Amino acid sequence: MKLWGGRFTKETNQLVHNFNASISFDQKFYKQDILGSIAHVTMLEKQHILTTDEKEKIIAGLKGILEDIESGGLEITAEHEDIHSFVEANLIDRIGEPGKKLHTGRSRNDQVALDMKLYTRDEIVELNDLLKELLSVIHNIMKENTASFMPGFTHLQKAQPVTLAHHFGAYFEMFRRDRSRLRDIYDRMNYCPLGSGALAGTTYPLDRDYTAKILNFDGPTLNSMDSVSDRDYLIELLSALSTIMMHLSRFCEEIILWNSNEYQFVDIDDSYSTGSSIMPQKKNPDIAELVRGKTGRVYGALISILTTMKGIPLAYNKDMQEDKELVFDAIDTVKGCISLFTGMIDTMKFNKETMEASAKNGFTNATDAADYLVNHGVAFRDAHGIIGQLVLTCIDKNISLDELPLAEYKKISPVFDEDIYEAISMKTCVEKRNTIGAPGEQAMAQVLSINEKYLMES
Ligand code: ARG
Image 1 (tube, rainbow, N blue to C red):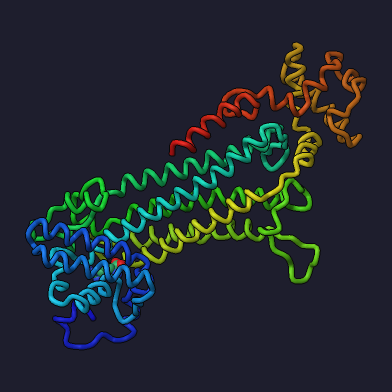
Image 2 (image 1 turned 180 degrees about the horizontal axis):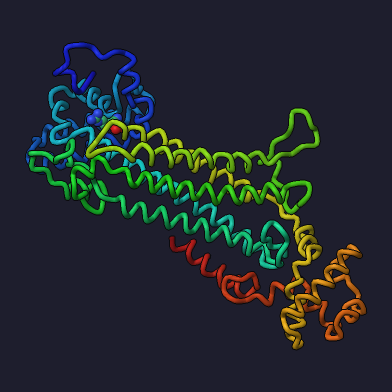
């Protein structure tokens, strides 16, 4: 059934129907469409636009449709243009005349704007929960690894020693910001467009505050033309999702490196790895690579919707139907990626000795060795030069600064004494860094308790 056949004298060309139809994808929000309609008729009855009997029949019919779709008893079929037409046609089949009043004071333009907002809101809640699970796993790994030393890198060159807890803590911050971005989007988008009609409101005495309230919005939107053509919140969401993917992708890249034969910092669990069809020795980090790869797809959705929206005059235009497949795919992709990533790091083994040895052998304590000299009255620039020479000696002998005999130290500067070894141990290097945000145990304990509280309260 078409909602708009009246003024037409010819049948729609089949290809046009197929091209125009959205039912293959907008059926994803059948539930939100039905709940929106229930709220709408509840308000229509309160405003005496529908009788109580009509309202009850319509709501019973809509609930029946919802139950039948969920139990598999009712199939959403492609001859309908969209989910809105499907539900309305089905309702009229079920309850007859009162069903024809469902669409009073409403247009598909404000209806689809509502459905998409309801759907997005639900998905934001799910994304938020998935990020929380990921943060909990990161938090647990951090708690266990405040004294697991590893090299910190700049330019992918070993720089200064940090701990595994500190390294993971960086990602904790990123995913915490991602959650707060989702929260912001939720708050900003949470105004109800229903009642905006096609573009200019309606002549019926709708109570838009009431509809907004029963659908848990903070209030109605304030301009009907904007309401039916606003897709800002989807752009913001795709931007937030792109940022989540960027974070996951960076983390994946590190895990791929750490899992490589060269690093051997971690072992990805067998259950999260795949093999090669030809090389029997291989255990590949495919999951991390796929998450990294799917980032492109989510960025693509963001650019796509921005481009679609850029030249559209007010108010609703059909271009906007293009928002759905992009957003649905991006949300599903990100949800899948967060879940898989969480499982992968939760089961991953850390080769702590290898990590610590790598930090020692990479001269990550060279800055601390220079600081030792500074503490003994040498100017920093001179100290830098002295340690540089010592590093050269070590490279020559293929040893670390800890393994260099005291005599060699003294040869270059008499300031050195036996306590140099203590001063440049991984433990000391990390321990001394105790300003908030640094890897030292005290500083980390402070951050861990802030994070613990955050996880409990949000
Ligand atoms: N499927 C349409 C969309 O997603 C629903 C709104 C249709 N409105 C219209 N005036 N054709 O945007």
